[in-house]
Each structure stands twice: as C-alpha cells, then as structure tokens.
Image (tube, rainbow, N blue to C red):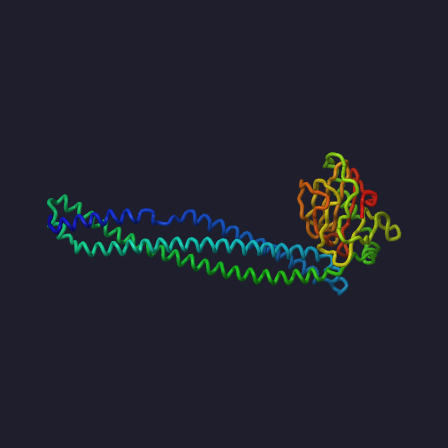
Length: 397
C-alpha cells in the first residue's frame, strides 16, 4: 500500500475516532437555564417582600414621629410596638429564606462548574490526541490526496473528509472556548451570590438587634389599666362605636358557623401558663362605664409568651390584620363543640390556621398588645352559642 493511501486510511480513522469520543460532550443548558430562572424569580419575590415590609416599618415610624409631645409619642409606640415586632420578625424570616436560596444556588453553580471543568478537561485531552495523531499521520495536502487517489471521485471524497476533519478541529476549539467562558460566568455568579449572602447576614444581624430592642421595650410592661380608663373617659363615644363594630363582626362570624359535636373538655386550662395575674375581670368596670366581655391576663415580661388552647377543638377564625388602637387586634376563635367556644385577643403572633384541630394545651399564639391595648396581655373570652359568658364558670387555675 502506497504512502498516500496509508495517510488516507489514517485520516478516516482519526475522524471516526474523535467523532465518537465527542458524542455527549456538549453540555445541555436548557434545564440549567430553567432552574436559574426559577431561582431568580424566587429571589426577586423575596427581595420585593422585604422591601414591602421595610416600607410598612417606615410608615409606622413616620406615624410615631408625628406625635407632638413625648407622652403622645410613647402612646403611639405602645400602640405600634406589636406591629413593629411582627414586621421585623417577618423581615428576619425573609432574610433567612434569601440566604438559604442563595446558598442553594451557590451549591448548584459550583456543581455545574465542576461538571463543566470535567467537560473542558475531556475535550482538551481529545484535542491533544487529535493533534498528536495528525502529526503522526504526516502532512496531508490536497496535492497528496490528488496524487494518491485512483479517480477524481475518490479525490472529492477524500477532500470532503479532510474538510470535515478541519471542521471537527474547529468545533473542539469552539467548545473549549465556550465551556471556559461558561465556567468564568458561573464563577462570577457564585462570587456575586456569596456577596449577597454576606450582605443578607449583615442585614439580619442588624434586624435582630432592632428586634431585641423592640422586645426590650415591652419586656417589663403589663396592661396599664389607668391609661385604659383614661382612654375610655376621653374617647368613650368613639371607643364604644369601635367595640360595637368589633362585636358585630364577631356576631357575623358565629352566625355563619355551626358548632360541631358535644363539649367534652371539662374544666378549661389556664390559657397563659405561668401568668395567673388577672388585670381586668369580666363584667362592668371603671365605675360602670365599660362592660368587659372577658378577662385580661398579664404580668411582667408576658409579651411573646405562649398562649395555649384552653380545651381541644377546631380553629374557626383567625384575624391576622388589624388597626392599631382598635378592637381585639390579632385574635383567634376556637370551637370546642356543644356551642362552646373561646376567643384569644391582642396576640402578637398567631400560630394556627382556620380548620386546624388543636388539643388542650397546644400553643396557638403569643401574647401581644395588638388592637385597643395599653400593654401586653391576653384578652380571653368564653362564648356559648356566640354570646359571651363569665369565663370563671369554665376555667381551672
């Protein structure tokens, strides 16, 4: 066999060999792009949520700053403190979610970088082998192909294969360049994400400091009955109207619901464990100027303490939104069967949802001072067929 034919066979072998080696080396970007889009959308949603919470906090602070006297300012702070605490906690939660998402994205990007590096190494080895084999095959020129061909048709075939080999070499180079660029891009994204993680951690530390300060502001507070009475005396008509509206709303809630089963709970559990102090009892108070529909439970450092279900039952209503200084704030209603229900008002956080079954003693909320309140406490009611009754006939201490 002459030299030209040997080179021809070697070139064909090289083409077949490296065509098979590179099968499957191209990295599919579709799934990766979809994952990145989903992560970016989720991150944007978290960022927007954080900004919304920050705007709410700034609006609250603006309302406090409007107070003309120090006394009015302190009263405004008392009315808004639970809202501030709740919003700050939500911001911390958003930051925790943001950090977790970014760390997950970083781990994914680093895994992809490792895969791309493997592809680069593999293609580079192929390219080196291709160059080595080409060198060993010798210099194959068009003239050599022409002289070694038995016919013009064979020459055209050989020329086409030579062209394909050249394209294959260029493809290897292009793939290497593309993969290197993708690794550099992924590395830049990882660095940017890590910077965001550090910024989020710094924000979270600052928000935790803010939260600690807010909690300290209410740490020693208990319900201020003197301030409550003064508020009633000064704004009786307005307060009576607001409370009548609240009671009307609660009546509508009960009218739309049916109590399920019989009451088998026996004596009810004290709803704020460790805090036996009743600051305001059931019935008429303040020289007959206000009728109290439940009992108020308070004490030093009561803010944020657990509120438990007085008896087993089903959560039939949760009020998550409220106007500072009005009504029961955030409150829960639990049906215990037999037409008997309990209401838990002025909470700072609600930990259950409508339809949820709760057992006697389960934590359902945290003590707060939301709504019309002059200090952290739980307003606790017992109702029969939607009508409030004296809780002492049902409670055990």
